[in-house]
Length: 88
Image (tube, rainbow, N blue to C red; front, side):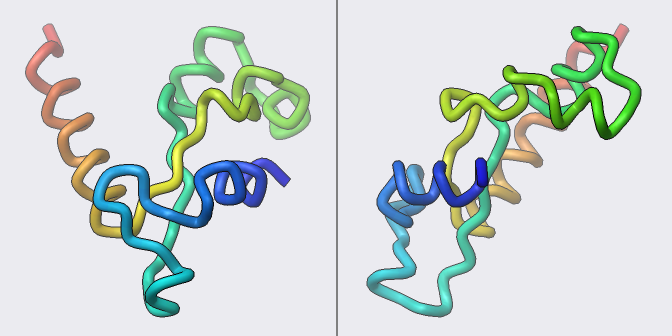
């Protein structure tokens, strides 16, 4: 499982604020795609679940990072703001 592999690699710790479920059981950790799932699907012409499941780039451990819920929300907000700044 990609998600579990990323969490294990990152020692079940947010890679931004260092929050850890080992220190605080209420921390909600999520796994974030550094390169978006949508972008990878578009670049590789993936239109089906089967195609997405077979795509190595989507599930590469290098494309994932463990984040707590708060940091994940912040990253997604920043990503959206940057995308909107460069929309022509």
